[in-house]
Length: 318
Image (cartoon, rainbow, N blue to C red; front, side):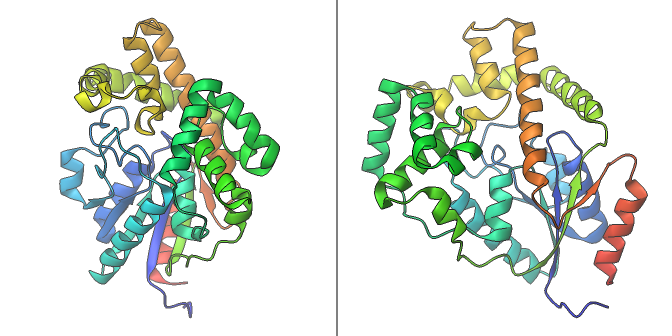
């Protein structure tokens, strides 16, 4: 038996379409657990089909937390997620239940499991200046500026991620220090639980690519484009000058759907672009997960007995 008496939690991690949600739901039902979503798209109301959000039946079977927290025209930071997730986990533990953290947003997992650094708070005036610069010069130019002052951060932040480019430049201009330095000085307390980190990832990358394509086609059949039309009709989104810069609409599939409905892509091009973007997301997720050295990797199909054995050993004591 382990001498570590901290409460237990399970982190079900992995690339998109690897089966995380289904496994988390199954285990939560079996173990009396509750699911904490670690997904940056699921926090937005109205992003349902395209984000593979748990439906009403699944939520009735097991309590889910951190879904539908914001409107799609609003923002939600990793720090806000860390605070909300910590509160949800504390409440689950207090009820004597098992928290199951499930999702694929690496920044959210890092914020919750490892803590965030005490960097400068958001400065609305400075943010507005950077936004104006982006309209004039373009986000690729601002990403190049970031690369010159903070190559470490620029290497982690994609050129098509304006929210994180903006935040990195904001922190540097406000403090005179690169955001990567602040992040190395994390002082916020880590999650005070004993966490079993499990990564679900097919051994064959082609299998994952096939799962991604099948899931996207299922989303289309379920009415994903109708969902996108409803979002586009929201007055608050119609009032946004550059809606595709919003975090919600940068979710894979949604940007491509918006462009398709703007007649910027045919139906076939839209499908191909969305699937390609999802594969690229999976590649980035896998790259980050390889840095989680204490995580255990399993093929969800081929390694199921070993996966169940790891769970049993963790829950029953080692």
